[in-house]
Image (cartoon, rainbow, N blue to C red; front, side):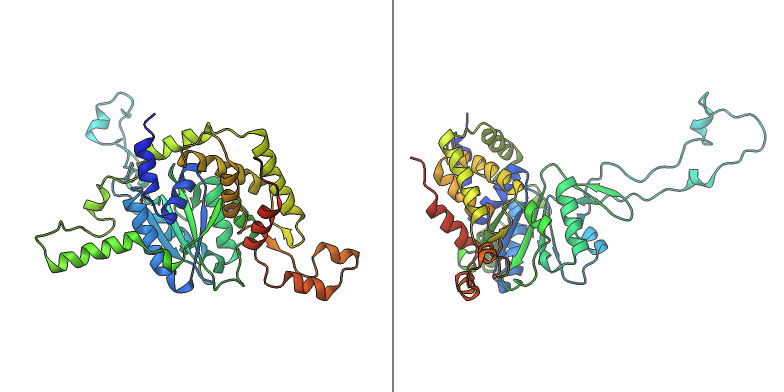
Length: 370
């Protein structure tokens, strides 16, 4: 097994690139959160990472309250440089080659030919990008969010001209800002996102820094460095990606052979139970979340040169799977209010509590197996 060179490449990735890699391995999708002023810069960083690190085709779109279904469908489709098929060609019946065929021979007399035979129907040669970065998806209307959910579930999108299938390696990233706390994702859509990750501006933007550094070096000296084209140019498209599709397939294969011990499996179930029974949780700990919990822990094991899941990997997976799903209870929906708890006490208990704090509290409460 030639895993060491692959692990060296994986360990060189940033946290943002690692989150994208895990989603590609699990064939799932993710939420990336950041500060409002960093959204545009982070979108460019993700575009560069898609092309440079994974060799995949990116598409970036911005959503708002006025975004329509047509806007969403057009933005995620990119022009196919080498289309696998072209417009439907007219029939050869009635041409010279057609008369040479036995089946195309016609009796003498006036011939009437449908105008359809001479009409070329234009074919939509666009394709769905491999990595779709959707900025401010939470601000879009419910219909657009449901369209995104449909794309994630069935890996296809229906436009006015054709049905476009998503590629085998497909990742949809919802890029959200912290300022949009009053605008949330549709619950079913939020539940279908595999993980969530917070990227602070202090974490840096390595791909953008490298691109800007090369650009500034080109300006200073055209003879000391090799000039590079913009992202998506001919040179960039033919560059060897850092993580190839074969690497992703290898990690996926390794993750499927990762084992759970009975003690660690019980640890996972205890975390799920404690989350569901937590007083500040009103919902979000779904069956799909538990499935994603198991899958993520298995995907993390090969990245740490392990063939089994450890409690530390389980804790890490819980911090990535549940925060974007958990619905924090209000004083009116808190369970103990049904048995006469004091309203002011419940308000004080729930004040300022976040899903991350709930997950950390549960992890500190559940006994870790040795």
